[in-house]
Image (cartoon, rainbow, N blue to C red; front, side, top):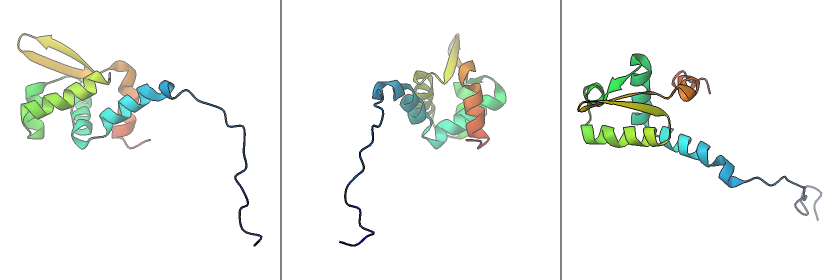
Length: 108
């Protein structure tokens, strides 16, 4: 047997973790894992609050596609929404402001 061969795995007492504890992080990172959604967050961050129709013209993609992306961000808790008559306005959820700014500024 050569001296550089590994004979066996060294068993350590690695602390168990509760995978469910990380579900929230998984939801957030899943919502962020899309260029269009990052662009939406960028636009909202620059304008504080944006109507869906404003995003349509800014991104140049159809409103139904924007709505799908907004729902993913909203369902993850990253956005807040305010409805006024037939219009829906979105803003960044205050608790995620710093996280989103860090992502947009590439300071991860």
